[in-house]
Length: 461
Ligand SMILES: Cc1ncc(COP(=O)(O)O)c(C=O)c1O
Image (cartoon, rainbow, N blue to C red; front, side, top):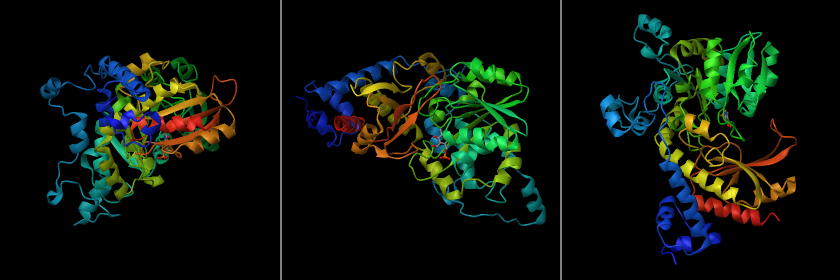
């Protein structure tokens, strides 16, 4: 009998027991005594094995993405953990350890000459503030931190992920332009490309995208932008970022990626040649389901124009208070991503063994079909999983979802809380529509999440 009674009460009791990660690990060291313990130990052992074989991916300049302590000392770099706490926060206003919220819409000047130079100062090195629709010190802290983490010159924060996506797209196209996009990009990004931009003469081609040639073969003389989302939403397919960017660059085509799934903790697309990186910071970067926010990161040459030409006009900058919350949320980004990864892998592996499940889509699984590309581009997987249940009627899907207690019914992801949504989809390569259930594993105990799924499956049939 295990000494940790919270584990030993059996799998159905796990749901009620307050089993956190630490006690889960503690429990794993105890003797085997029940099915739940064995299951947890088996899953954990495969995670440990996967971690042992993990090699830090190389950056384009040959450096390791996660440098050892020694190389950090030699190169005088600080780690991501330290940067999340301190980068861009040198100035301590009145000694305040946390940067204050600059809750003001405008900035005033002592002289007309200062005012005139303030209006001109939009470059990152001489950030001058005059109006919070463009910039504000609370925005700047978050922007500098994200730009640094994404290995780009500059970042700007927006009022939502879609504000960032639409501004980034508009900064790359003009009347008559053509876009090649991954088919499974975020639904509203697709809506913009498919339904909205044709009004202005901008056409788009959608490709499944698992093979770089699908993009390259669709390039025309008018192609101005390639849109990637790797992994893509719902089915988590990867695109070969480096190969696609290389071909696009050779033809003068800009590339943009939605990096919301990975965050810079697990993927830095600029190292593979992407021009613009966008985020729905509503998701992992904010991390607490209390803001909507977006980010665009890119080279100064593009960003300075984007700020003057698009951002100024659209007026979709992030307000000071949510910008401050974004900085606060990011302090725990790496810790949270590691926990989402642990929970996501644990739940996905359990689902793979479930008699109720036909197919599981999750980049962290050993069975993930693009494992080599995953290892090249990514340093970890997140908390999103989708699966195709064997039961395929709307009523059964609804019964399963309604029976869940910990997984709450709702869109979005990236916060502390686990979520579930179901959708009838027919992605490219499928012959018919399938019910797909998407789970987002939040920060609850992984075994509690599994117990919740187990009891909900038992209610289906
Ligand atoms: C991958 C992805 N990109 C962009 C967005 C849009 O972000 P927001 O809701 O912050 O506008 C979402 C929203 O769900 C998303 O999932």
